[in-house]
Length: 287
Image (tube, rainbow, N blue to C red):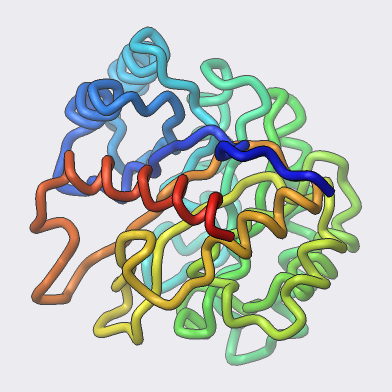
């Protein structure tokens, strides 16, 4: 396959990358940096639906395309980072509310989901419940022209946020879900250490719905991601692999940086935008 010289994915930013900024500051600084794609984090939206809608309207009006969404509730069971509500129906209702809020502003938007932790360590039950949940979530999303991207997380999140940690496991789950609008959120930080990853990426094909990037060092906390190009992730090779598998969507930088003395959040966030864009473009060219 002949690959293009320039990055074939639209560069985007997940709002957790600039956690210290408000939603309005994100819109201002992203557009000022030439970013055209945003991954909306519901945690940054106003809790009043009318004001939240106005924020989304502001983002779209400023020229930002909403590629994807991190709902405040991404798993249908309580997790370490999303402990409330505890009731499954309330969690489903919260997710539905996020879809109903954001989807009108973003055709074919991808809502990121996780399995949540396995109950009492029962991974088999967690996967069974995830399949059932995602069949229901797929229906919710389909009503609004949206898609669901199940994200397998790094093993550091086992028993806290996830019961699956490989791309192949996620592919097995969505095969059981068997809905056209359910696929994979592929996060390089989470998956770069998977065995047989190139084979799994090729098998994923059109099920790859979203690409997230950041870089890895041995974590000092539960949220210790680094700027692209400063760690161990073979970003260029992974970009090439997802391209070869047929992915043509956005490439979204997602950096979480809490509880470490050298947090990315304490640096110049405008520079973070520029540095990561340049690093992603270079990674594509170098491979």
